[in-house]
Amino acid sequence: MRASRAAQQRNMVVRLCCRGGLLPRLLFSPQMPKIYVPTAGRKAAYGTVTSAKVSVNGVHLHYQQTGEGEHAVLLLPGMLAIVMKEDIYSNNQCQAKVICHNNNLPGSGETDFAPQLKSLNKNLFTVVAWDPRGYGHSRPPDRDFPADFFERDAKDAVDLMKTLKFKKVSLLGWSDGGITALFAAAKYPSYINKMVIWGANAYVTEEDERIYQGIRDVSKWSEKTRKPLEALYGYDYLAKTCEKWVDGIGQFKHLPDGNICRHLLPLVQCPTLIVHGEKDPLVPRFHADFIHEHVKGSRFWWIQHLCLYVVLRIEPGPSAHYCLSHIPSPRANVFQGQFPSPPILPSAH
Image (cartoon, rainbow, N blue to C red):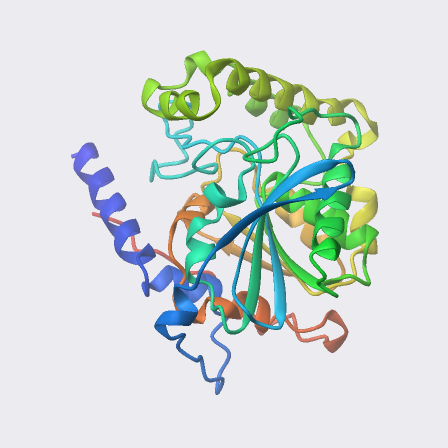
């Protein structure tokens, strides 16, 4: 009975998250009344994705770019890009057993955001997905985690977009990419247009540290998950990077209040949407609440009954552009009471 119910839940998630399903429409489209959602044509929806490297701050950063829209968007990937099913990290709260933290190796724009690169409206947006230094194809150098690695990534990201001649950009960041986006928005307010983040945290607690230690040893991951990463990066690099990340993110625990960027949140000026999944096994909800409370005028969307990271693996429908196109300015004072209720998924019986 329990297995049957789990299967029903998985099937329900697939139906709701498929292209054009309920979740893409609700998550990416705040369903504003009397606003027409244009349908992208075949060329716009499936345009060419180009890949290149460019020298930025002494390293060669890899990026992918697609679309011809006036609204420039940078996709910021996370760390520990793995299919973290229950056999890797035991957490009964993640009942759907779907994607709970990325799907391939650390911080690759291509692996984290393939559906968004493919399906975001190419007429409205110019979309760039990047690999931070040490991740994906932005190697060498090997990834390291000095005390200022988030600030360094934020500078790299902004300087990359300036090198590509974008005058202003919006940010879509998740996990570590969400933290990097917060740094960028606070440090370069005149350059950031709008921002959507999910799976981010502004500080580290003892609870967080216990969670991080639970994924430190890649030899304890399931072979099904580990083997593709070994084939792509080699076991040694995978294991070393995972251990260094745990140590790198853990160093903030020893700072006052576990501070990563909590002091920067009041400096964020751009319209901001914070999204959080109820079944997120790595980032407790209080982190999203804290960011929402301290980023002035921000909106918060809580997705019930799902690991939010499943959203990364779905193809957004034609209305996906709403996630950025209709986040009004905080100065308009229209955030309260006008954002739709989070999608409530029916229970499987």
